[in-house]
Image (cartoon, rainbow, N blue to C red):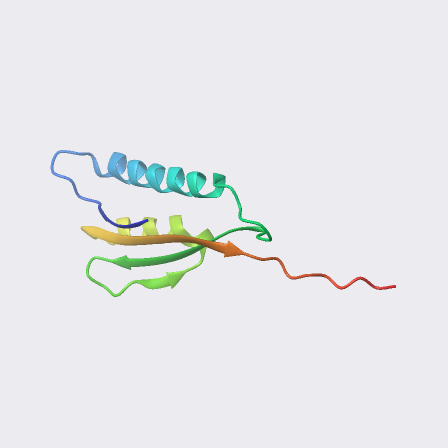
Length: 98
């Protein structure tokens, strides 16, 4: 998902707009995690980027998505850019002690 979200729509309540955006992002994440995993892949790793208004998008941690959205809303930004790309994730192999 590479999308610019508008926080200020003409006739919509800003809180409702913010909730709708968060819902859309959560729905996308659930859909991506539900996809079948290829062979030898442990999980779907989500790479995220975030940018307020016209700023250059910065890489962020997956768990900080809502925090950055809330910060953009509190800073009265008109819009923000969110990029979420699913990649193949691998867990490190544990060595067995004998």
